[in-house]
Image 1 (tube, rainbow, N blue to C red):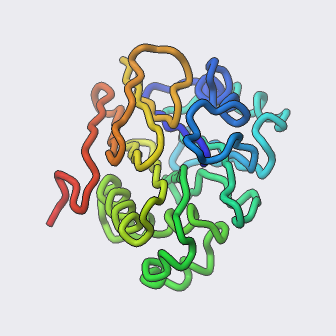
Image 2: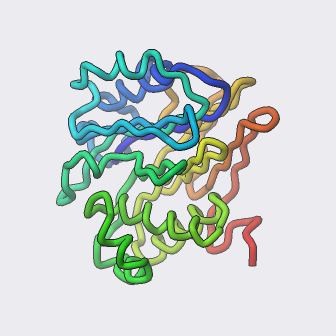
Image 3: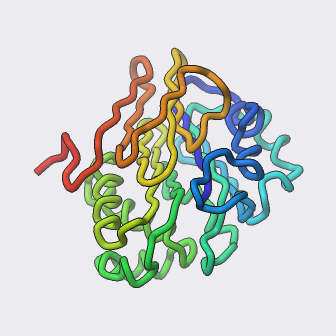
Length: 257
């Protein structure tokens, strides 16, 4: 089912988020704790995206995270104010290629999907048909995650705010493809949005930043599980880190008419 994490806050070592905690994303690639029937390991690729300038930088590979001997040397010196990273467990029948690994990116945006769209691809054919042909022709990979990113990105381009774009995409897909697992994560380095939809998600708020992750990476008692079918919106600047959790439904609270 994949695992992912996001962080916003003061600049920190990217390795301190992804590789070094006792239950880091690296460990979750081979020993996840809460897959909930969605596989046993996450060995079908990984990606790390970070913000240290105007746009996001992304490093993706098709191999398991634990096999990349260059990764500690790459991430160790890096410091970033925003990070989105993921390890992949490919759904049966979907390709295992580098471009299928999250995070997907466009300019400042980073996106990840932890889950599966049931009945793919016919269940969401009508949503795909509403996208520009060029977007469909240039999907990173022929996967449900890449299509979800195209759907969210189209809403962002239309001027929707990140929370609304993610929430409406989840609700539309869930209506057409019941029993889907739709844990989405999106950030532009200023706002971090994530959904808990039939899978695990937890949050951590400290004086220095805010993190959202499929699984807590340590035993800090401040980690808080997100209820199922809820959406989380986090910011870290300007001002202190903040986090809001709302229920997901047909029209989540706070949406514009």
